Image (cartoon, rainbow, N blue to C red; front, side, top):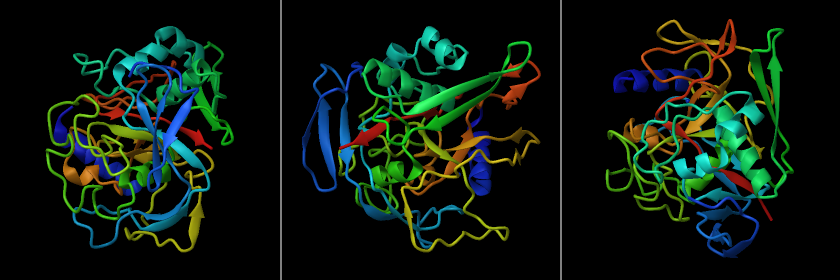
Length: 343
């Protein structure tokens, strides 16, 4: 897909809505300011960071450079501590957990063959739907002897074709899951309130954006909490349904008070949305962080974008539900990182 089309679609959506180990059974942590850097005892496992419960402000002020609509500031309070990966899930991590057998067992469909950048298994996994991201979380939880965070229910029609996938979240489970938008943005900011975790601007030495491809995770500097690739490289799925923060006049909504443990709308939105090319989309989840394909403005922590749970970045957009059932497809710019509840 051409870059200008991708940027246009992301801009439109944001307006109406925006490596080796499998076990994390043992955690040894070293205290930091608002986060703790820890490492699993399992050899070769990636580091993770423990983020303490806290109250902060997310979103962007009206005078922030490169600001988009629909990013109002809002006070949030997190009552849960959580671990978050220092890196997005890599290709090798993904395929060690989610082979076709696991994908069929959990989702009733294969993995996809559109994974784009195959030359380095330490690049972030991309071309992955939201469904496959949550299925990965559950399967990794099972392998790690943790309680899965998600219940995944499949619906089929009379011919046996898959017609719906419904996911619910057990918020008390200790298994792996996707971050909420608030958890993601707090970890990306790492205690800052500037446009980027590195300051008011972002350079090509600090993140992978506006380039031609993904780069190996950890190739660019970490933020103050030791978390890499929160600016660019791949967009990252969050748990939340996308909710528009722009009112009917096109003005950012105003939030008062404090939102405690926000996780988006409590139910799947009923509305469908008409894309600029006449394609209807629905079931939109939050994306954060920008990617290698977009500019620095999309890599700001406050930036809100959204895509359907199943989406295809190609020369056209396919409907999620076809006459024969779900036609799930994937993309070249979206990946994910995982979190889990922490003591």
